[in-house]
Length: 165
Image (cartoon, rainbow, N blue to C red):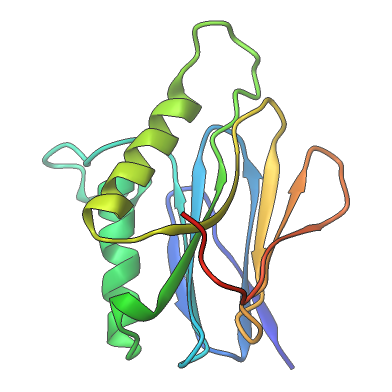
């Protein structure tokens, strides 16, 4: 039986083939999924804020893109995966409050993409922007990433086909 592990805002979780990862209520946040096809290991980070956590904010550090991505990669490495084997997808970055000058979703996306690029990652697929909330689901046994947008049914975002730039 495969269990679903929920990833809340600011959380980072990793697991093996016996589990799946799910995150809901994704607005301006960015969810990063990472999956290793050879090891059947996956991880998810629910990033709330761009950049790096301020000094002294250890308890909430993984709310920030740089800290969350570092922790995600570290935990995946501890399970035996190698960075070059990971397929990465992004979900979120919406302006759900529809405020004209609200750029936090864009800032989160730009920060997350920049950090991943600096670490040598290509983004395989993404469902980002707009004004609708999303959810994300990583099937760790298959590597398929699904998402919802607003009240939509689950849609396939990514499967185990080749990377796109």
